[in-house]
Amino acid sequence: MKNRDKILDYFDNVADGTIVSANDMYEHGFGRMNQEAFFRAVERLSDAGEIIRVGRGMYIKKSDAQGDITELLLNYFFGEDNSSGMFTGIHLYNKYSLTNVKSDNISLYSNVCKQSVCHIGNIEVKRPAVELDFNNTRIIEAMEIFQNYFEIPELDKTKFARYAKQFARGYDDEAAVTVLRSMKYKKRSIAFMKKILDTYKVPNTLSQFLSNASHYKVPTFNKLAR
Image (cartoon, rainbow, N blue to C red):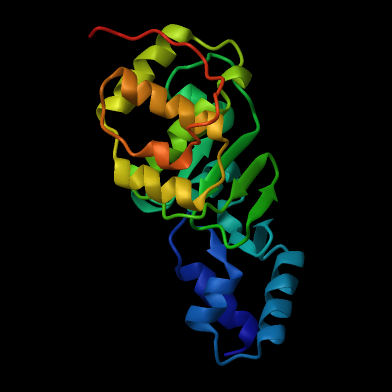
């Protein structure tokens, strides 16, 4: 069987709606083939319209071209059970109803992303410095919200207060330390998180990331009694 036919056969056998990474495809099925020849063959098939390029090194079956490409890409970057990705920016704020403002541009973190950052159409994907398990994701979401508090358009402060209390109730200090040691966030954003936790009397060790000699300007927020 010719290399061209082998590649097409591979695409024929993947599930509908699957984003195929050319790098993964080569490593797991075509390692015996000359690497340069493999990628040239994939590019030729794409140029001929036999497969569809949706991003750098990413392809879909020709039969999937009429579907929602954005949805396919998000499914790819979020992974099975949404365990590999998380929204940032407006879509994160929408998730917690912090604003009603919408945006067609989508930003997210994903462990699936092989580069530090990649842009595909209206989607920006960054690779986080930690695994996006449940607890790490909650901390990163919170830091993204706290750090951008003043930039959230038309912020609903009541919804924010509700989010802050919910976050404090489920806080995981070990995950926070892991994230803050690996990812860069401003000291005032960490101080804001600590203020929320202290307000709800949640034990934490965030002082290790702050200076006792510094005064951090943090937003005020309403404490919810229940």
